[in-house]
Length: 322
Image 1 (cartoon, rainbow, N blue to C red):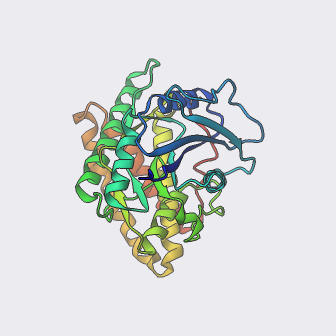
Image 2: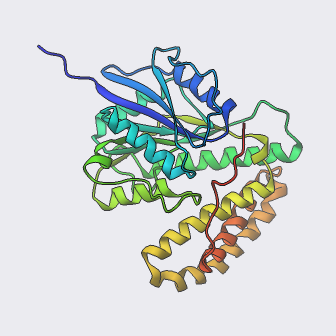
């Protein structure tokens, strides 16, 4: 009896000016176990006019080929679409994304493919954990990291409760831990919105469009990736800006889809501002870790207000980490 053809999978990451983080990601790709019946290729899409990634191996420790392409058009949706084009050109059946500041668990791909085979979903996601940086941290940075770690853990627990291999109604699947059937691009005409060049949120929009088409989605709770949190992100300013820009992007998309909801959104903002008071009280009670939620939430309120006046997020203009 003939053996079935292997599933062809492209595992991709988009990157810009983070050679050290990319090296750590590539090393973790080389350590990941490979599922039976799956032919894996890894792809780095460098969103820059010239490469900064030197001395990358063409073959990883586990035998997987590592390819590297440039996408000179600035903006993360262009890089993501370039990865999709590469997967289609390689006749891949599946495309996976992780972020360039992450590392994957050794069994990540095993668990993700297992979830794909069990669910039959066309778009799958999984949880993200926080990885403490190796460099020394100040007292404030330690408190903020604990806050980030708790925040990610809450999101993981909530996602495991609300979503599974049958449905993901309670979560949003984003490209920090993402697996898609390539037919989403080739047959259903989806792509990452290139008008959202620097705002972020194109992966959330892609997910919403997949759901709107009635296509099956799944959550793989045991497929783990971890994000390295560099010291530059462990500041009140960064956490505030992150919350502001993410909220502004979400609000702008919501208002574009439902313009009539602007007054409802405006009326909810004072309630969200009042919710900052318990977070202020919680700061000394949590050893400072509540500062992360306080900064994020204050930023989110600001982002919602500014988006009502047409200000757009510039989330991906600045690069943190090396």
